[in-house]
Length: 242
Image (cartoon, rainbow, N blue to C red; front, top):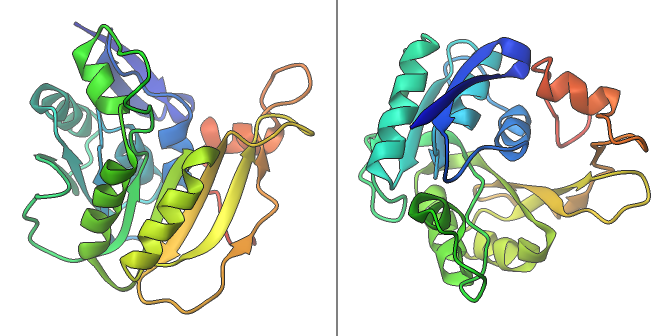
């Protein structure tokens, strides 16, 4: 069973499972941060029902996207969402990012990796558990799979919990795609960041920079103007600043 909704203030039609893994803010913020241009090729691991690629393809007409999703039923749903939004440049592949055989190199790669530790309580819905249950080894394998597909100077963008940062940065270094930007996502002013965006560049030699980041919520719980412009207005989120 699925439910119909929308993203980017109604610009994107989005069907997703009624139970199991349901998209939150993460894929929209991830898509907004990818520095793609029309004609660029973008790879996503764990694409789910396609939220990030749908937002990216809507923000940047002419972008070429490939989403890799391990769960066949979810991959089929992502393909339906692509068709419903008329995004002819996006394809969905039902496979694992660690072993998928893809036909080209990519200008950009992105992922919102699984992050629940193996020792945590399992979700009663198998698809949600698969989508969210991760480990250091799995994160390292995802990063290796994405980096392997990147061209020289291609970018890798991840949205991850702050506690996953050390493992992710080390894996990026090991794949010759060092992290050049760390971008915190602050829940509110004065609150610790639970999520961060990481940007890596294939074969880069630049040192990592920690950017000011983005505050998501006002004191009353509503979105800040900057966050609303991204989540509803479809604005870009430049990690390197403007």
